Image (cartoon, rainbow, N blue to C red; front, top):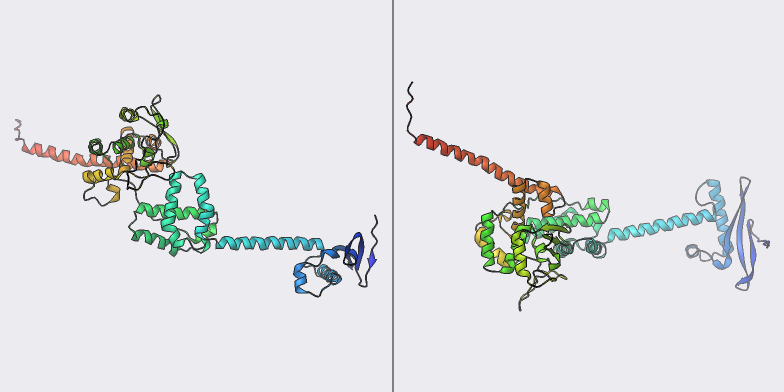
Length: 427
């Protein structure tokens, strides 16, 4: 149906009426503007009178009527076309307004992101993701490090405002509390992971952490004689701790891996043991006769359940990892015996014997007997060759000692020669 346009008292402004809908006492009107620039006719619809004037303009000019609003647009578009600037039509204006709204929203989002604190980011984004994608024990350790050493110092600071001095304060707090270099290293590494996770290079660079070059690698390993001595002493005090130690030194297990084993993980047919949720993922280790004998003596008729269930004595605090029912740290019994046998007067953490020394000793002996770094890496479940390379260094140390001892052999040979009487050679 052809629309019937009506003229107004204003040049370039016209309207047509809605057949049924009313606005106030009269029919609703649809207004349009027309004007010429350079001989070209421009015609644009403005809208229905019932739609009213945009809120922003109404607030700026509360006395402005709808026809006045239409004429305002007419002058604006006509002027913009002549000058070649600004919106030249309602469609272009809507496009510009939409872009401005999007830019405003993006700026608001940016400001909100810049003001999110370290604690808020970790609570709402980092740790929920870590819980889904990291091993349970890794998640637990990171949560503890954040709660005790990161959150109290920088938790309330926005991610974009954390400075190097703030990182240093967190580090100094750990130094003052006499935390180990390994704990400090892991905590600073966690801060770096949080910023990397945020995927904001500008944020990460602003709070760039200068990681200390700390050599925390164990230098102490046990000889076969020392292993026998230690296991005998431990067995006299605790059969459970002894059996855990047997697994660690014969299979290269971390304490958490040994303590978390279940009977379902043991396969006597293949002579293997499945390590689930290890620090570097799942892997399979193989059983020698010593381990098989120990396991069968411990197993009895059990086919399921934990191999080392935690027994909480009345009046003591459980050492179990939350949600697993398994011990989270080695028994104090082991450490007391290790201290008595090997650690008297030893202050360097790298030279002290701990439960982890058993795993380190396993790796050292595997490499010493095979000379194969790749085999050593797989036996220990390392992701890269870098970690396994330390066992090659241990072997090099032993090789250097062998060369050094040759001087003793030569000295002994010379002393023996000097003690012998001179022989007379007849010419």
